[in-house]
View 1: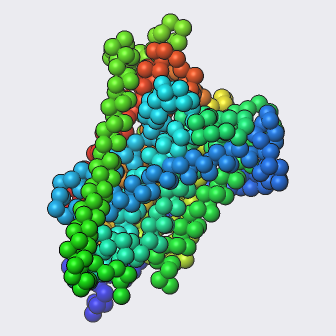
View 2: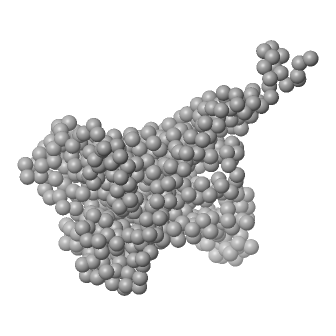
View 3: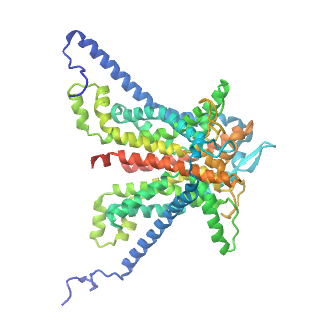
Length: 298
Length: 310
C-alpha cells in the first residue's frame, strides 16, 4: 500500500523534506540575503556610531553662540544660514509645488497630455543631479546679481537652488496626498454649488493638509542636507551675512570645508555640525511621520 | 455647512455680481495652477538650455576632443574630461553591482507576502533603510574620510595592498549605500504591484518560496526592476559630495580601484567656485554631459515604469 503523500507516477514522497536540494537552496538564498542586508545596514550603524562618538562631546552652548572658525569655535552663522536658505527655498517651492500638484490632480482631466508632460518633467527634474542645479543657479541668479551689481554669491542664490531641489518632492508628495482625498467629497462640494476654488480651498485641501505637510517636511529635510547646490551659489561666510545678497555660511558647506581641514579642532567641529544637521533632519522626518495620515487615523 | 455662500445666495441684486466674481476667481485660480504646473517643464527646459548656452564657448573651443582626452590644464587652457567620465561610469557601475542584489533582497524582506520575518522586524528594517536615505551626502563623506577609509586601509594591509587616502573603492562603496534605499523602495513597490495570483499559482504547483521569487516574480517584475536600477544609476552618476570627499580627485584612468580617480560631479564641486574665463564654460560643458547622461537614464527609467503601469 503506498502512502497517500507519494507521487503516483514516480513514487517519491511528497512530504516536506527539509534536506531536499530545493529547500536547501532556498535556505542558502535566505541566508545570503540576510547577510547582504546586514552588511548594508552596517554602514548606517557605523555612521550613527561615529556621529555620536565624535559629535556628542563637541556639543556645547558656544556652538550656538559663536561664529565658525577662524572667527570662533561655533556654528551659529552656519545654522542661521542653513535655516535662511531652506526657508527661502521653501517660500517659493511650496506654493508653486502645491499649485502644480493641484493642477495635475484636480484640473488636469481636460488636458491629459499636459498633465503627462508635467508629471514626466517632475520626475526627470527630481533626477537632475543637485550639482547641476547648482550650476544652473550659478548661471542664472549669481551671474544676474553680478550683472546688476547687487552682489554675487548669495543666500538668494542658495535658496533658489535648494528650492529647485525641493520642488519635485513637494509636487509628488502633494499629488499623492490629493489622490487620497475621496472623490465623494469633491462631488458633494460641487453638488451644493461650490465653485472649483471653494471646493479645493475649503474641502480638498483641509483633508489633504496633514499629508501635504508630511511631504513638505520631507522636502525640507532633504534640502537642509544638500551641499552640492550651495558650494558655488551661497559659498560661505565667516560672519553672519548682513543681507540676502551676501555670501552665506551653511552647515553642510561648513562640514565639507572642515572635513578636509588639517586642524583637529576644525575636524571636531565638522562632526559637531554633522550631528546638529542630522538632528535637524531627523526632527523634520519624525515630525513628518507623526503628522502623516496613517498615524492620524489611529 | 461650508463657510461660503457662493451661487446659492438669494440676495438677488448682488447675485449676478457675486456669481461673476466667483467665476473670475475660479478661472484665475485654474489659470494660476496651470502656470505653476507649466513652470516645471519650463524649469527643466531652462536648466538644459542655460547649461547648453553657457557651454557653447567651450564646445566651439574644444569640440569633441573634450570627451576623448585626459587633461585638465588651466594654464594652457587644455581640457579633456575622459578621466571624469570614466570615473563617473565606473564608480556608478561598481555601486550598482553591490546595491542591486542587496536592494532586491531588502525589497523581498520588506514585502509582507513572503513572511521572511515578523512584522515588527520588517517595520524596523524599513525604518532603518529610510534612515539610510535621510543621512546627507556630506555626512557620508565625513564618515568615509574618518571611518571607512582607515577601516579599508586596515583590511587591505592584510592582503598586502596599499590604499591611498581617497580612491575609487571607498567612493563606490559609499555610493552603493546611498543608492540602496532608492533601489529597494522601488523594487518593493514593483513586487507589491504584481498580482497575487502569480504567487499563488506558482506555490500551488509546488514551487518553493525562492523558486517562486527567482523564476516567476522577479522575471515578471523585470521591467520595473530595470527601472529601479536605472533610477539608482542616475542617482549614482549625479551624487557629488561623498564622492568628491572620497575619490581622491585625480584625473587619471587606472584599472585598479585602489587608485584615486575623479567624476564629473566631483570635478564641478572642486573647480567651479574658483574657475575663471574659459574654464567656467568648460565646466558648464562637463555639467551638460552629466545632465544629458543622467537625463537619458532617468527618462529610460520613467518609460520603463510608465510602460509597466499601462
